[in-house]
Image (tube, rainbow, N blue to C red; front, side, top):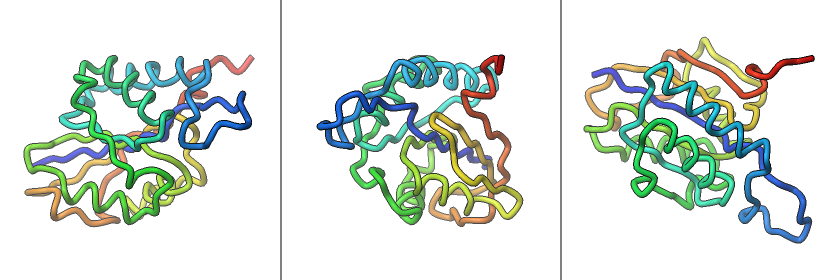
Length: 169
């Protein structure tokens, strides 16, 4: 069965309050605009989730909700995991291998540097130095169940980020 993994780095966050804890930082105005933009890009490509899993950090949750609304996913069904907050790449594999076999497409919203490091483990034919904020990487593989997931076996089919859609003038 064809399985699709979509990794999404949270959208741009606000640094306006220096006393605010990193975990509690919200999206800034650009982040609020970028998340639906990228959700629309996924929808146009008919990459629609059966599950959305997000870090519990505020900026990741806000990104997940904005993308979910655009792609028609019930925001109440977004799963939130503490283990995705500033995690090591191994945390992603744990999340993926615990997915129900009914999930064909999953969106995972998390943070750098872990998400970039994990993205670079998906395929031997793909490499990114630093996932920009709100970047999306979609990768596909054929697996009977997610428990069979292994790094290096996926085919990266999409790498997009908001700045690609803005006029550079």
